[in-house]
Amino acid sequence: MSTAVAELFMTVCRAEVMALKPGNVHVHAAGHGMTVEDFLLSAEAAAPEIARAHAPVGERILRSVQATRAAVGCNTNLGILLLCAPLARAAELPAARPLQDRVGDVLAVLTVDDAKAAFEAIRLASPGGLGQAPEHDVAGPATVNLREAMAAARSRDRIAAQYADGYRDVFDIGVTCARSLADADAVSLAEAVYLEFLTPFLDSHILRKHGETLAAAVLTEAREVRRQVAGSSSAALRREHMFVFDARLKWQGINPGTSADLTVASLFAHLLEKREEDQTGTRA
Image (cartoon, rainbow, N blue to C red; front, side, top):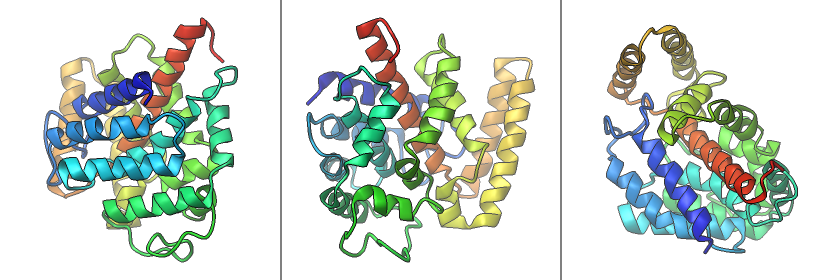
């Protein structure tokens, strides 16, 4: 296991649950039948498997999901694990090239065995709103490599789209936002990055569970809340807008889970980059 990578994974998972993320589980308010403790235990269980040295991506995902189920008995982190496994593998490659390029290298060599392991992990996690897919359904055997399988789902799942598009959203939206707030602490970064992901496109977790009309309504409201937050004269007023939005989403049973997963992956990528910069003195 890479202890440093496991510790960074734990750091971002802790920051994510400490952050005020409207509609999602956080330290200020539980929700959706889960608690902050569930997420912290999940991160602790999954970290050694995500950071398992030289392990294939699919193996990391499956072993992390198995460890999570053993720790908390429910799906708290499937999207996080799907996104962070390729990042952790890429961090093992020589740092002469940017992390995003190395993620592309990892995605390019994914195998059918990776897909088999990921399919098993998804079945075990049994995420809400999964449904059936017209091709490469996880209920059946994997017949293509993991990137091809994810590419087939890109139009309905933003996490799958990262595999197809070389983690474009993670780096162009999430990491870019985190870099712009270089002096902020990890929790503040998580809150800012989460708002970034709530506002450019429909949250695919909401879309799967509740449909396009409701997902579009949440997107519209998120954009208004972001405008209010940006225009607030004090930190207290900014948080009040966030708390009101949070309570409203949870009252309706709406969880922007994909936005939260992308937030964790972005912070993980950002901290991996910072670690490499600290080691080399330069950005690759």
